[in-house]
Image (cartoon, rainbow, N blue to C red):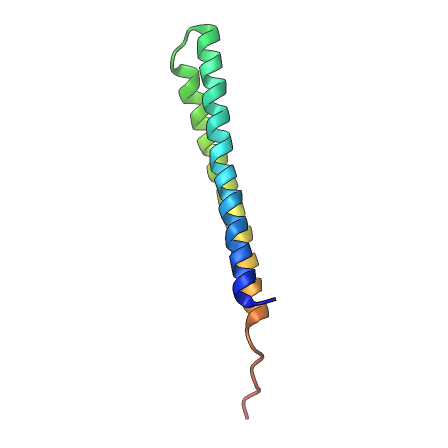
Length: 88
């Protein structure tokens, strides 16, 4: 397997994972907030509250995933470096 292919697969995984991690909570928070506001007549209180909760959960999740992908990138870098010869 070529080094470029391994890096491209990692980049695609990161892109898809982060996209879902950002998009899904925002959409679900907006839908839930609008539904709660419609039910209780509190427009836009619950929409804002749900979006704030989604933002906080997304930030925590992104931070954890960035750390995990960073260590995976470092492992990929180490495995693709040629061995060094000992200094005499």
